[in-house]
Image (cartoon, rainbow, N blue to C red):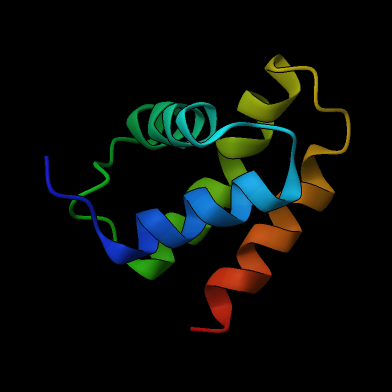
Length: 82
């Protein structure tokens, strides 16, 4: 599956903001996208930001990351800057 540059950027931001490995970050974000009805290869910025704010926090909590909202704010900030 081809993946968008936005997906890649979000995965890298998730890795930097947590203890997750590259594979864990990619898998976690992919699950959040799937739950929202999107695919990594065709996601656009507004859709990805919606996933980061509404689906991803729940996934992070399920992984034991207690500061999920702060993590998602950091990811959104990095996505918004280009």
